[in-house]
Image 1 (cartoon, rainbow, N blue to C red):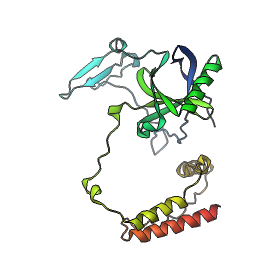
Image 2: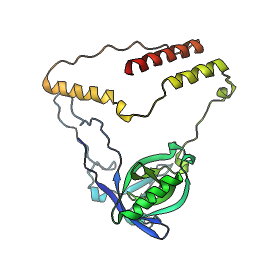
Image 3: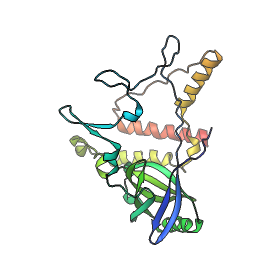
Image 4: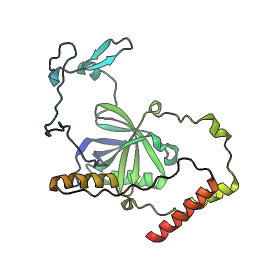
Length: 266
């Protein structure tokens, strides 16, 4: 079931002296099978209550504040009034900081995507989308979303305009590559065989060709429990050896398997 798109933010994009009214809706939809925690013996739901460690008393939600724990175990309590004084971007504006080439941003920095839908005159919205598409650039922007200042990019995606939030630079960890990797050499033959394998499996991106087999099996399991029938569990495929001794031979087998797979699906 497809959930209706709900507006999570409304405001304007400042494109020079042009203000473009937009509304943000989530561009993704999680489809994990959700469960309740229950007691195994009878299925009774397990509930959690917010209780204070000091006396075990339940704490009403209205009395809950944010606490920053110090290294010595002390706690600094921050109220909503304290947080209200912090500097954040305007809650109703997407401020364009600069334009950069789309390829300059490491995809590891990308977080959650939203569709920026026109919420007024569509012409400036179309102009911004088409100008970004023809330039090959994205707009780096700041906005206040869910009570926090966010860094994001504004980019075209087909006929849509996407606001994709980003991690701040200090939130992206650097890769720690082992020193021995720099000492590894590959032969021309190994590289050629690896490239052949890549070429064999290269094709046009078709997202509809991929399915979540685990979720499908989980839904089948739940349905079988409801219907009271047996579940047929397919046998496990034999695992491959953890360590490849002959790299060239493994690559040859990979290429052959890829060709057979392509022939079966072709």
